[in-house]
Length: 111
Image 1: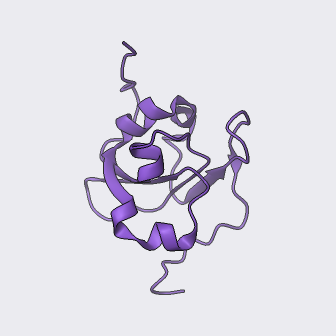
Image 2: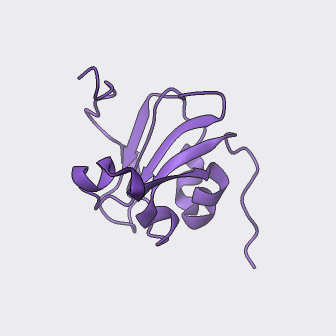
């Protein structure tokens, strides 16, 4: 059985789409915003094929430990200690993540 990655992971929970967390699809888009509270890592993880309607439905997003997401997709680990705000993406799972250009970190209620 694979050992869970725990070293040097930021503490707290992350928000992730159920496509990543339950269907175990690889992460193709992730961003980190300032945490909402002391238990929030600030990380948000998506498979990259969720549309806005899917992402806006709270039934499609859940709270998971950062370690759980790192176990599902270890390719996120090198980025997890990047300070917020930051965003990373990749077009295909066989590619490396790159900084996401032009991501708007303005909260929707302010935008």
